[in-house]
Structures are given as C-alpha cells and as structure tokens.
Image (cartoon, rainbow, N blue to C red; front, side, top):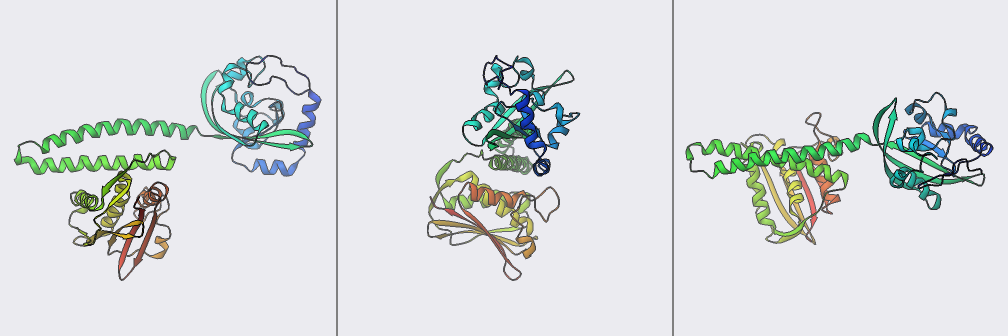
Length: 379
C-alpha cells in the first residue's frame, strides 16, 4: 500500500496503490453472477476495499449518480461518489474531515471492519451543478473476505421521503391539535353558559369538536405505533366505569344516531391495569365498526368477561362478514368501504398485540352475526 493521502481529522487517509486497486476491481467486475445479483437489488450498493474505496457498484447506483460509466467511480469513496460537500473540502477526501466524525456512513464502515454488520442513518449535504441539496440515507455496512482480502458491502437506502413525512406529521399534529383544542375549549364554554335556548346547537358544536379531537388523536397514536414510538401510560381503573363512558361517548355521536348500544348485563366489577387511552382506542374502534355495519334501529352489544388472568372485551352486531373478507380484515388498508379506508381494524390488531400485549379475534356467522373481541391481561 502507498499513502498518497496523508492528512486526516478522523478516518485513515491512505488509499490503495494503483495495481492493488486494479486487482481488486477485477475480482468483482469479472464475476457475472455477482453483478447480476447486485443489479437486481433496489438499494444503491457499493463494494469497498479496506481503504473505503469503490471496487464495484450496482446499476442502481450508476443511474442515481448519473455516471457516464462505472470506470469513473472506481477508486472513489462513498462521499465522493454522492457529492458530499465535506468530502470535497477535505484534502484526503471522504471520511477525513472533522465533519466526518458524526457521519453515519463513515462510522458504519469503520465499525464493520472491526466487528460485524452495522446499520446507521446518514445525512449528507451534496452539490449538484453548484446547488446544495440534502440527502437522508439508511446505510448497511457488511464485512466479508475474498481472496484473503477484506471488503465491505455498503448498501444505501434513500429515506428522505420518510424523514420529510415525519417532520410534516409532527408539525401537522402539533398545529392542528392546538387549533382543535381552542375550538373544544370554546364549545365547552358555550355548553356551560346559561343560554338554554341554544343549548342543542351548542351541544352539536361540542360533539363535533370532541369527535374531531378523537379522530386526530387516533391518527397520531397510529402513526406513533407504526413507528414504534408510542409511549405506554399504564394505570388502574374500573372496567364498568370505563364501558359506561365509552357507550355514552358513542351514543352522542352521529354514528350512533338511530341505533341502539346495549351493555351486556354481566360486566365484571373489577379493575384492570393497562393503558386506558390505548384500550379506549381499541374498544372504541370495535364499537365504531359495529355501528357502521348496522342498520337503523339495530342493536350493537358491548360486553366484558373474565377468563383466567385476562379480560375479554367484545362487541357484537347482526351483520355477517364472509370468510374471504374475514381473513383479510386486520390487514393494513384493506376495507370494504372503499379506497382510503381500512385503518380501523388494522389499528385494533397493532395496538392490542404490540402495545397491550393481548390478542384479537373475530367470529362471524349468518345466523349469529359478528363478534369482535380483544383479550387483555388484567395486569
């Protein structure tokens, strides 16, 4: 090895000599099966030598960086291939500036050489025809040995859209919850006023504000649950009071109009220790789905029964769900109500199994109708 670079503020600056680099390139570009396999991958992939230099790339990467040919990429380092501004500022190239100390890409490569596969996130400022752009990546660095020489398979996935969505969701939920909170506050003031003449109108406004708040919070909880960021807040509370409150809230909503909600008589008078908000979301979705599936003047029944160390919360309605629908009912975005629906039953399963550590079940026959149930640990 010859050190043609000798200055660094972080990673080793040395590069392979020309003969060594050409030999390593020949290892892979003459391997048609490897080329076929890597070209079939949707991620951008580089094979790097111990000096973090490119000795092979797949077609996806060539297309992404708009390279004239693969030969123009050989010998470069990842940041140089992607146009990272810090790789251009450093005398010894990618990985050697002070900014590289916090770079997920460089750190993943270096750690993988001493250990095993590393996964990191990496944020890059890149230049393109003099314009600055931002790139968010998830990177995988996997070490392997070939002909007694160490190499790294370096795979990159562009997650810029994912990061933008997270930021937009955060801003959206923050701003809209504040706005609806103001509406909810004023509607509560109107409800408590002494003007009984407009009480019915105030009640409609108040119900709409509360329903809107619930719908927004439901989407916020679902987004957090899918990202694995939903925080649990377990507490002890009475089951009977919980069911009473749930029934009252849906009796006063438009969805419950002209339909009857019946509480089963044998609800156990015990306490449960779990996250009240998430359980309310799960049972509320079951009740909402049952009401949507019911016709005017039909009855939806909600109940709870105890089984060993679990409580089974169940909701029944008269509608029948055919088997071909029942097998898919908990899948994300599957719905019989049209496009853009299908998150209700999916969220029941996600929240129950991943967060409440329970289980979900649905039974349906033409004779007896449909019963959704969730088994929740009492503690």
